[in-house]
Length: 162
Length: 200
Image (cartoon, rainbow over all chains, first blue to last red; front, side, top):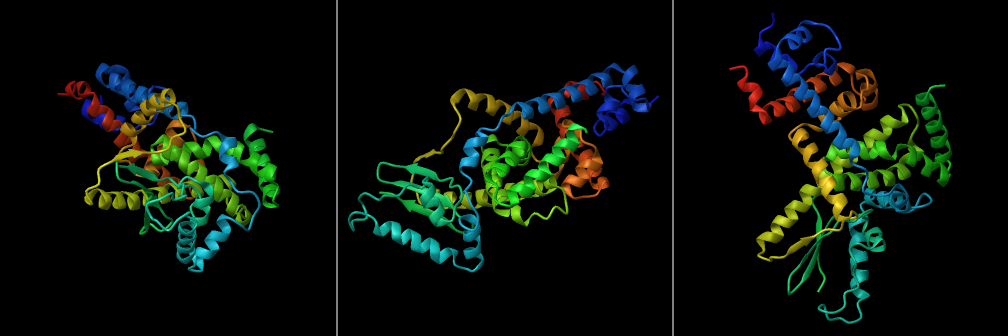
């Protein structure tokens, strides 16, 4: 008869059918006659059922219609075009121009006042080449700062909002 | 005709129509595969919020790239590759943002971190529990092994089907599966030392 040490090692890679005695074989035979290995096999199967249940139960947090509403209509504009510019090496100058334009839209030249910039705005995101911004916003008594990743893993924009 | 065959035929028809610019066909196509995309994203990221982000990104990428889909491989394989790449892209961005945050921390500014979320508190708690379980089992497991384990062990696909989906050999699928089983089940053993005690 198979030794428990060997059975335990085999249980780590065995097909669930072997663990539940749905198929015959030396491991299944050992499990059937050894209560300790049987308990281990049952524990393994139970854990996998729990994991399967957890994954299945986790519904998407976003509604499919809402997600589709964020997909641009039409073709040739939006992301495809942005990618084209990126390939042409124009993405960074474009982003810089967009940032400059936003700064110029401020009502006064004072950098401490009324910066009309919302990093979660899809308009701003599109202008800068992000399809979905995921800013981290940090606030202190002196300043609010948005940290935004870009398509380029080496470039992150840190925006001081006031 | 089997459900699977009907599903494939419908997918093909919707892909053809969506490629001509039919928005309704595109939306039906996405709805048909939405849960699957989200599950792949969840397995790849191990985090429900990240899975949502990746799913959203995949929808945009599918819309942008659908015209270039030639149908040489199945639509699901193509979709899987897009999702897998989107997961990789998320992790690269995450590293980049973490580096920026570290530099910002080093500058001495102290503050709260606030991040937008679309879930309510109750759903968050339930999701957190499920996410905790997934993290416990999948932590340290390479993405390919997670995916194979999910597809074969938890969803019941055959090794050959998974091989086709992932674009690898069936023997590679089996190797990933055995390694994933060993890692995950070893964790079960670690959490339940009483089983180990029985052998001493």
